Figure (spheres, one colour):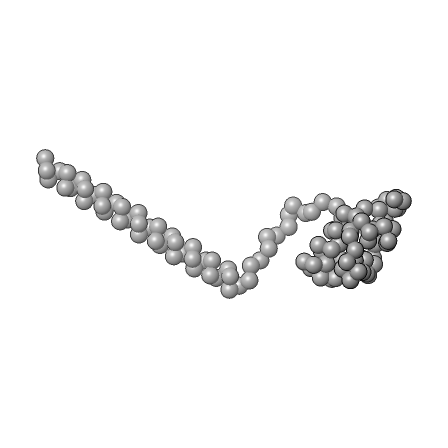
Length: 117
């Protein structure tokens, strides 16, 4: 298999064409890489993953280099965030109630024990 150009950059349109052709003609990653003269079939596999998860628009995102460590956390939808906060509050209240109940039970047991002696 002929080697491709190292560090070659492919346009988003080319990537879309490759993936759609592969899917339409039911070709393997290796066959597709060979037909389009792509050096590594794993690159085609990565493009398919991006296409299926993000759509063709995902090809326009620059993915070279290491990811940023200072990236802000992903935001949850407002409704989901509110539901989670309400659940946390409910669980904290339940936990506090059970702690108080346990303290009352222990105190009652101590009193019963003292009465016996």
